[in-house]
Image (tube, rainbow, N blue to C red; front, side):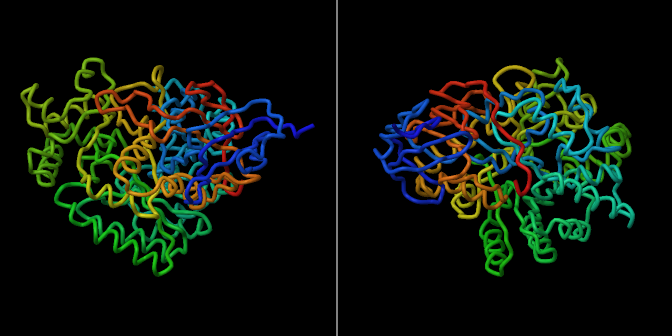
Length: 531
């Protein structure tokens, strides 16, 4: 009698995650692990409770989203359809300085509006409490997180524009060490957002030293006018602290900065040649997305949201803000490239999906006046999409062997609380778009190299043990897709359209997508550092 297993995947074209060419093999799964990878037809003696005939399909480790923002949306709606139908089995969260914990003091109060909008009634302060809530809710994929510097700083000293006092610096290290001991993979920074924008390099180096056996990721101080200086700061943090560093959503933002691409790449590769561990991630689109108030000068954020709104309402201060915005962006074309993606007030819903230039013209006001008025009326809540990048530069970056793929998006579904506004289509399209457009159609790299970029490479970079490979004994996180048919369907006008081509998705051996349909299973786990 043959050996009994839970699941047999046979006849597939196997990409094992190592960057190799595909080969024909069968996979035996028992429990949450890959029991064995067998030469094709060597599995005839196995007795499987379920069998997938993957003939004509590609089998790969589940995709790892290296840059996600699902901390809160997963508590609101754990279906996460936008991610699972892309083939994602693991997310790295806590990016850009914002993480689910620690949340104390001003950091806790600042998050209240987000939680209320998503209907989240539970509250927490540290990662242990937060992870317990996630596990109670159930996860369709694995969840890992960084500790956000912004969350740590705001928990200790609010949103003040000043350096930390010695005792405050000590408390920040304490909060970071607590987060790391509870499983955070490292530390992230968001250096264009408050309060991260107020931190100097010395502060960041000090915290990075506390996490030097882990990783430091950064939404840098600039991705445009001061791009080179920002990369140098990241390199310096890596050199001074000894930590592995990672540049989030690397880009050259603004047409006048597109020509900096070669210098930026040369700077990174010179650092790598000197032994500094430096990697990056990027999404396969030429538009970015963040809060609309990111257009404002950083000094306007000091003290938190209420203080920012007071400045916008103060006529004299507001005039100063407007002058600085216009000086920074004198070209009318700038406003044609910013689209309002989300608002809260029903009376403003017509603005979603419209450019600032269009809305201001309809209302008969100057774009900068519309900006200020809308931020006041919506209490800083509007989201925006910024069309500011070069397609040629995007292809250069995606082709680099140390650049991974990250959606820079939260997990959303096609209905319910997380279907709101007109968000960036990357939330539903990132990985199918990378594979279909840049690998299959443009031929930037082989499919084996592409699979490596979204599986083994991020697993090694973020130290996810026994994941990212199809190998005996590894966790059974597996995607089965049609590489000739996989494609993104989400657009800027219709961002909630599911992609096509992912036929099966296994997370820890349990099917989350089966024959192209969502199973509703939640086998995902919280992945703590070292686990």
